[in-house]
Image (cartoon, rainbow, N blue to C red):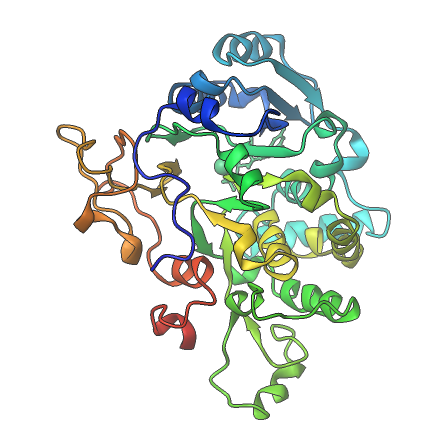
Length: 385
Ligand code: GDP
Ligand code: MN
């Protein structure tokens, strides 16, 4: 059985759910998007989608962040599209640049070389700043201080099932700290030394790997038996135990999570440690990888939630659940995704209009591994590969 089922399957009545809940306080939550002025059309597209599928019933506020001053036209159009209150904020220069410990000229040279080596986004200085920002400074940004929960949005994405319950309220009620939709393999050439640094920090802080920890799911079991596995310590890809990262990570362009988890001394300490290593520039560490390894190390399995009922598309990747029985739309094709397909039983989605034959979710390996890390009958391949 599913250790992490959707909070609700199929369509709900948002007003009735709110009335029935015992909580009197509405979650302190915000929809947040980092964007450039040039992202105006895609930003509007995303907000229109979120409003149509979710926020029309919930009216959560927005925060838009930019490293440049906002173009008044962006503010006008997005204010028009967002029904909730919207705040447009700028990121301070210190939060969008090299840390003091990194030599700028060396870093720029390295970025140039990463571009030449064909590392995905490796040659774009602004992308390195963005990944560093989302890995650490994002969480302490003043505009997010009033909030406890955030839903991260990106320009140009689609939500195509109705979300008829409050995911923030459910996360709070069920003690979750991190929610995700799509998981992928990280491109190893963007972060050859990241895992080693993260596990060195884990070791230095004596953070244990407990039976209910996700860390074992982050790791790809070695084909070498103990104690021979420890020989692999010499490799920067491995940790002190000779284990290696599976490269599985939550795709962070969608996140619904607890800001306090990332504002904690522990997480910010990890960020500072990584920042000082310079890997946001000497390599191209992605915030998705950093968030995921931190969640894998610091959160328990039962604090992480897969929103398997959300239809989410970013670029050519999407998660597309089948509709709950009786809610399938005429003409929509809902094939589900890999081993978690619900196609046999009807699905868990509500009024989904996505077409999973057109775009793909990366099936199987990472989703299975991360979704149910402690489940002994999870597909055998995910234990050994
Ligand atoms: P991808 O999803 O990894 O292909 O990268 P994106 O180009 O979508 O960038 C990820 C997020 O960072 C999006 O929300 C972008 O709008 C934002 N972003 C990336 N670079 C910049 C930048 O230089 N300035 C600002 N303000 N936002 C950026
Ligand atoms: Mn994007």
